[in-house]
Amino acid sequence: MYDSGTLILQRGVNTAPPGEAPVMELSTVWESYYEARTVGVQRYYTAMEHAAQADAVVRVPRYYGIAPDTDRITLFPVDHKDAGVYKVLQVQHVMDNDGLSATDITLERTGALDGST
Image 1 (cartoon, rainbow, N blue to C red):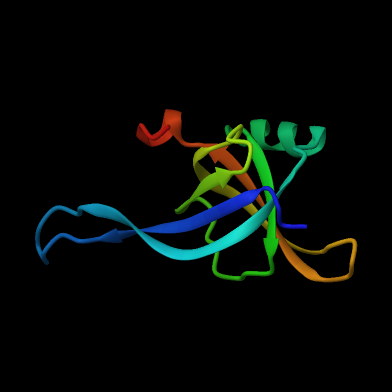
Image 2 (image 1 turned 60 degrees about the vertical axis):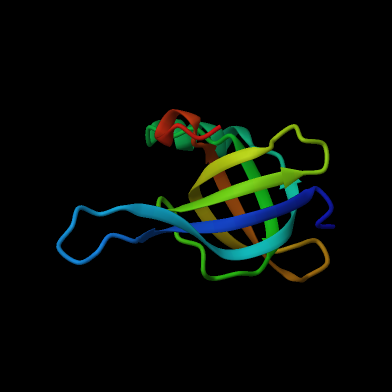
């Protein structure tokens, strides 16, 4: 099921000394295997209505610690088609076809946002 590759969930942490300008560095929060999903037409156009672009959707085992807009996910796919860093747009907790708890994550490539590829 989760055979599309691995992902790393990262969150920005301010590493500046107190009183200094913030210096944000990414810290790894969680790692998991994932299943690549199809970006549906409704999800795609809903993201566009909110000035975002749904570039990928992945399914992982249920995990509640994902924060939309602030977290970054790096994908290491088996086929290298979708490799890169993504911003989390939406998190949905669902049941998969086997009745197991899962989390669907809608992602947007960050190349245009923070210079990452």
